[in-house]
Length: 131
Ligand code: SF4
Ligand code: F3S
Image (tube, rainbow, N blue to C red; front, side):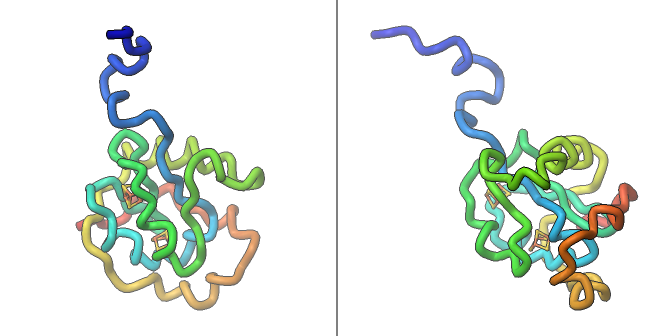
């Protein structure tokens, strides 16, 4: 049998030939959390005003994408150019913020901000409560 490529043997690589899904700017100040309720693993982490996906836990199933009312979630290789920084942001803050496994009410600011295009400056690095 032909040898598998070296990367297959690296820890965690076996089930991750592709990359994770990424929460992008539209989540900020909305945090609808519909995504959390359909995720089969505990890879969402809660910040004060957005969520992040842990790239080491996401199994790339994609079911969260269509659940988000503001289309905030993209596979890493389809993240729009203007939101590329969210790839690193998810990886960083998923390690700092608590896990959220059950959906909760959207933020009180969700309605006001769901159609706001530029809200990068509103990002809050503080952790959320998780559950
Ligand atoms: Fe969870 Fe699947 Fe979305 Fe990853 S792609 S965050 S595993 S629902
Ligand atoms: Fe955020 Fe959309 Fe989930 S707004 S919390 S990514 S459903």
